[in-house]
Image (cartoon, rainbow, N blue to C red):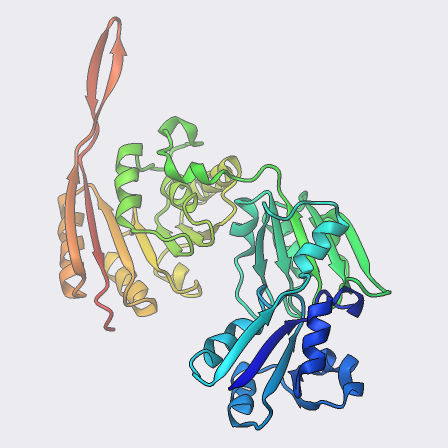
Length: 406
């Protein structure tokens, strides 16, 4: 039976490595890790294998002769660590016994330096991963970010500033626990102009964040900034957003977004996603931007233009709402399906002609689980001491899921 210990070395300085980790390293026959992990232990005369690739490490252990291996990882072995993949692979081998040894993580250390509790922070990693910065920041009071060489504090702060969040306080730490440790705190707009080393960490503070509870309510029509652009009314909007079958990390299109009422209500459910509001009318696009600011839904990107041309360079969608097509319904659906064959599509129509076109498109492109709903809404209005019911135009809501074949 081979023994494999995955050992967290802590924040960086060996003064933060605890006794259990040191004793385990001493007892190992072979030490494995990146060059910077191994450099402090070369005098122990252990067998050394330099690698930070999980598959290569596991293959080396499976084929090797030593009985006790120590895999050295930075920070805590359970916090965005190589340990996750290595453990996943090695636990399939019946003749390998795995032990994960924890340590002080960068989150714990940095929070302690700022005298902050960290049990209420959202923590994410931009190191070698795609990360939706804006959605994380707007829904959380404090967001801890492990940054990467291509996605550092300066770049992240530039993104925040470009979205109107340059006023947010940002704390950055680099070379934590070492002699050249540097901690900087300022507004995002200021941090955006600074230079930092590759593997820094940061905390974005947003005391005016959106409550997740906002995503569970139906917004009243009068809450929106409105103009001459059309707006999907509250009751219909609730049905449409429900038919999109959203998940929190979805990428969503709202084509013909009007005032952005559907965009806002959907975006409030996208805690880790992004919504693209496509609108050709400049006046309507300006209304969308005002509603974004009012509801703080900075995870909405306004795309000014006419679909399908306007969506050509957008990311692959998981769901698409069409409130208006400018006569391009077939072309738009075709373009969306080319990007994402399994996309959820919801179409609103008022006229019978548009209804027929929507049904024809669903049949032509072989959508699954097609559903047609007719919504007729009447709302009460005071007339003296009486309540009158005022009817709205009936709306057809057509929904379906792409067949997965294009």
